[in-house]
Length: 492
Image (cartoon, rainbow, N blue to C red; front, side):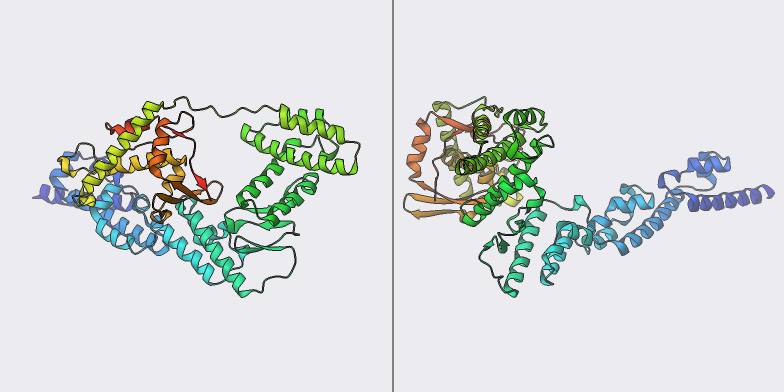
């Protein structure tokens, strides 16, 4: 009897030690019978037989984990502004529990709370349009200020933020323009939804998706020559704003290339320009732009020298000639593989075959949402790869007939293609890098296809990539090395 009482007391003491271990442990993986055995001096088997017979110990661990997870959920939910702040990984890490255990114990409750929170995109979008509705001053409507107000980390922003910011900025600019009286002045121009003072030393091109151009950011000697040129380009309106922005960058790079060794571009010699060119550490792309800025600078100086008959006219001729004719810059390597007439004809033939197969497949009215995109589905009728090949074939045909780049083709929308009159079609295409939009006219597509099959000169290479790792169709197999002919597009 005494032994039984002693054993009962010992068991109760061990259970109290277990509760103390639970209170002191910060990590779920440290709450094991092995740790309790080290504290009590009893073996794991003895503890399982006399103190915690199954499933008492797992139940105790789950109760400990549930309590800590609940506390972590309550704390994070009160301070969470987006779903990113209330992620399962954050809760599990705060509670010292693995995500697997967390999902096993409290997944449903977490999902219910998680769905009540906005995504980072929803929160940023709502805040941005609130700023627009409140007529925020344009100088306070910057990407940095939006980031600080939302508290969303840099990884919370995606490709969508640039489009959102530009649309909101234009809307805010329009609201300000509608409420304010247009400023007076002969040198004011309404460009990209905003008034720009051509006599100012700062031009805000952010409504066009670009940056602010400042004359004080250029070298003083370069700015004295380049700023009037840029002003004339803005005033004429013949060039896209993205092109003017590129010219501004060229003048800036020209000043960086000259460095401190040439304090004034108007008094530089050819030998000084050559030494600065050799010492410049910029890449070939930066060198091309810097060269463009230098050429425009010295062409302007040369025209001024001819008018005033300056003594430096001969030196200016030498510098302009060297920049124009003697500088050699490496060009991009041309494409290593081109299609012959027979290969291009094969590509077009398989494109038409895949298009016909796709149309025939869609005539059966399949439900694309429930079908598989795998190459080897359980049943042949369950695959929608005919539609995928159809889309790839259309892309190849349009690129080969127009010479447009892949990115321009991928940005086409349904309303961008139209029939102007029988046999003549128009397509609106965009050059996102230059920020331009054009209307191209395709006359008699049948003749264009025939021209493509006999044309021998090719000047651009199309690389079409597929996510499919299995054996592709005939169209995709040949398209991996397709080179398309010179554009037959007629811009309007």
